[in-house]
Image (cartoon, rainbow, N blue to C red; front, side, top):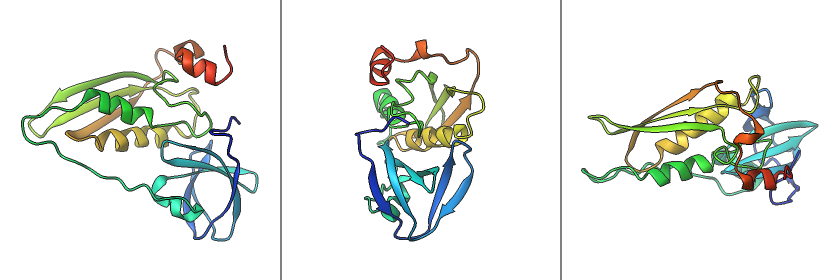
Length: 184
């Protein structure tokens, strides 16, 4: 596994914590007192190795591993103002596959992002893919995209659709992503 920020910080869980097993995407719990190593900390979530297994710890549970909790805030724009498209793309850039230290936009996983004005507010429709069809973390990553985009001021709702056509390939990554992963 490639580590972010070259930090393999040893931690002890201070409380029971909900976690998602990687790569299966299965929800579980890590028990208070368990020791682990943070192998990646990007986008407000943490990948932690515990007893030979990898788990994703969400930002709202970061206190369980001695980190600052990430609170989700939903702001509204005054009537008549539109959603900042750059803010939506920046929100998606804060989403990471827990095993790859490159955001999903630079990985080339976002195929489209369409904005539609509705009477309730702005609807954002995101078409995305995954690096592998059998990725158990797919629903977790898609849910993270939905949550983060929905937190952008003025976004009323988000629809994330996982698609498989065209199939993802390394050529879809930005040059910076390929360089970061040592592929150039």
